[in-house]
Length: 114
Image (cartoon, rainbow, N blue to C red; front, side, top):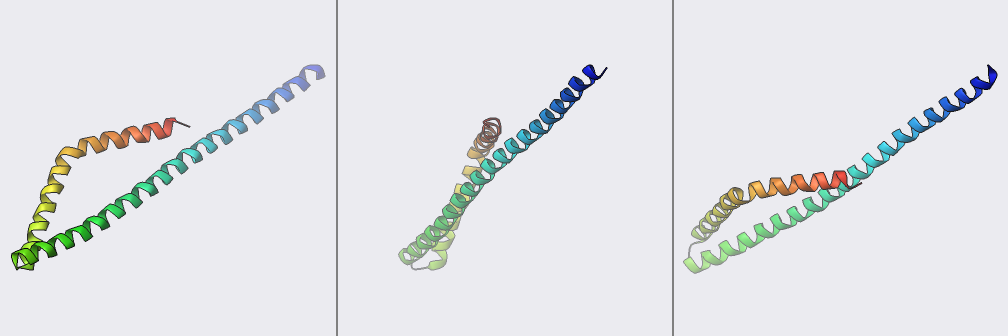
């Protein structure tokens, strides 16, 4: 009876160790995936903020320039704001599906490439 009991205890200990190891592997994989996603998100946010600030300064400079040409600063700002509105609507119509698709593919690729 003791000859069967010892191998069974060893087997149970091995199974328990295997289970703990599998849990640790899953934790490490999820941490890796989360860190890749968060670092990519920070990079994209930084790029987005830089582009937005650049557009703001470019818009102000363009509006002031057009205002000088038209001898009325208000018209310069109105023309530039209308241009931004038109560009925003066009990009929303054209790019919304493309952006959703590319972001979805990127998230799937990031999650599966562990």
